[in-house]
Length: 175
Image (cartoon, rainbow, N blue to C red):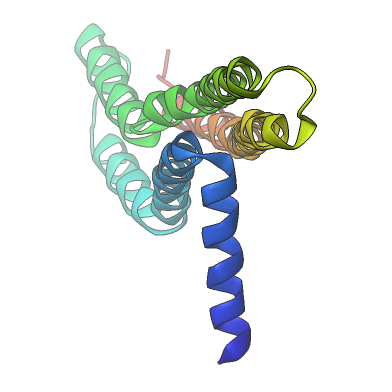
């Protein structure tokens, strides 16, 4: 029980040390990873049902080579493609926002450093240390969040592209 409380205290201290921008980065990272896990869950369970339904619709068709059949095939592939790539643009946007918010944390921390320098002069290193840590911690947090999200987004995008190409080959038109 005490370890959990210590853990929460450490997180609270870290958030206080990084300033308010760090809290925004933490919330943004939570939303980003929630969407990433939602996509993983969908790929594992919901996507398979959609894929089976689309393949069943295509195989139930008698005509697979006419212009109408090719249009229906393209519509089925487009439906799957939209479903597979549903949240990926939003996740990519959140990944791109993380380092920008880290940069915002750097700017606000450096403003604190300059305020400390203006108030107490350049000789007081102790008053400048809080601003320097406030500047570096959000930058680090934004970069770590962006790197982790970038890795997951790349994996999800590759899976989506591969699955759409696989479906395109499965629903080949007969000549």
